[in-house]
Image 1 (cartoon, rainbow, N blue to C red):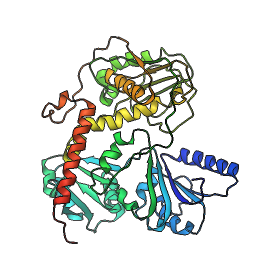
Image 2 (cartoon, one colour; image 1 turned 180 degrees about the vertical axis):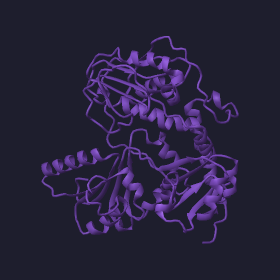
Image 3 (cartoon, rainbow, N blue to C red; image 1 turned 90 degrees about the vertical axis):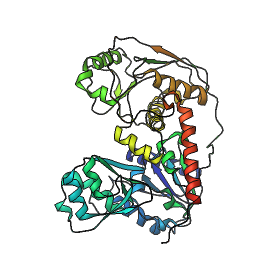
Length: 443
């Protein structure tokens, strides 16, 4: 982006927008180049002049006469922008880190919902069993919306929202879902390049969801040649051999005694440069040294001199989510790997593991052996580092957590994550072939 041209730069959060702006301006000053940067985020409009999506949309046309400019937006802003036509002939849109492209919500069922929604919202069949496109029929003003319907209504008004029912009467049978999946093909034909910059992007939930569209093709590339990592001691400690991490375990009063032991285990770390995180809503009962942050820390360089990190974190799909992804042909374990493993990888790599030259010992903590082994495998395959796994037996009773959902089929429980990813890839390939073979519908 330091080369003259017109670019959109998409970052994961507002603080990164400010940081990347400063970095770009400093680099262009060093190179003796003039660069205009327009930052459009949710916190730069104190007077409420307009919503972020519309302002991003308008900036394309307004800045098209510039020879060298960058529009910096967030992932959320990118998803909210409905019309990118003002960016026709721009050089590139560069998306830093993996965006959350799925806006999804579960809803209760019942006759009240079916009768109320049937009056104000339309359903159009999609050709997929049990899935419909939902539209607004009118007759309901925003101030009349009940609180538990506002997010759903906004999703519908934004366009291209779907529901997991063929008819509103299906709601009589129980819970249902609504969702809106961002369509990356909105950018096609406008930008010279559409680039996603993220470690292990092909293992992310966004990649799997975008790959459902037969028109989407990805081409892998490297930003630079990989630099060898210096050998160093890495230890990954965990407390559960058999039971996997679950957010319900971390939050439930039923498991409070076990979790008190986990928090006391984290409190054994006395290094002030200790980065740690837990699921939102977890009841932390011990005074833990270090800095607590949110689980999603992709892209940050603020802790690259820190050598200790702990994450008591889970991101398993709920039973309703399992049904949703199964309907799309995506295995639940692929989503676990895409969410949980990706977040843990990104979190632990905020430490000095980011520095290829560092040889300082690193010590990490997570909940279960699967998480520890998954990250160890990542270190070995991507960085050539060997991690020692250490089970700390802290006397957990570990009553099982009811995961819900359907039992695995065809021996799926015995499949590795890699085997499931390959099975998911083949399923997506079969869907593309089926879609390409199907006759097109008239407009």
